[in-house]
Picture 1 (spheres, one colour):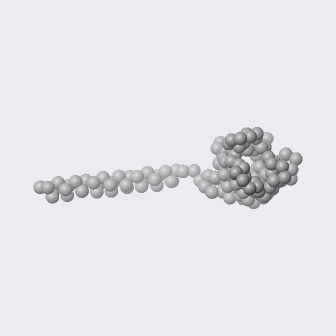
Picture 2 (picture 1 turned 120 degrees about the vertical axis):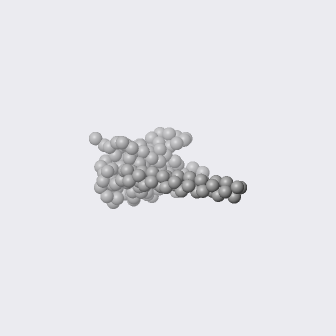
Picture 3 (picture 1 turned 60 degrees about the horizontal axis):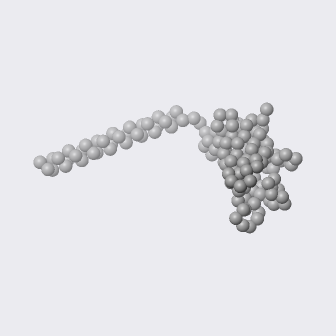
Length: 153
């Protein structure tokens, strides 16, 4: 009798596991089939008015224009009164990953900086974060910023 109960118990556990997993798998398949396609460079092509604001410390915004092409080449960052800075871009799923520099920092005089930015398209806005790495030694060589942008009119 005890063996029959154990056998019944194990069969119920197996059936629950089997049917529960197959249902979860089907839900995952259904979700994947209805998920939107990944972001494309063409979807964000154009000029964007951008703001980068540090998370802490001096929270004065840095403004610039992001010029995005319909492919991942020849994107630039243009700061007021300066020549465009080339940006290397790749699209990963729903994210735009951008690397620029070294170039003369807008925030720190006579210091070179490299930036690494990850943004997403949310409605009509680009939102994300950036890490600025300055060519100085010490604790203030890295700055984390919140980045937002809207299409230029």
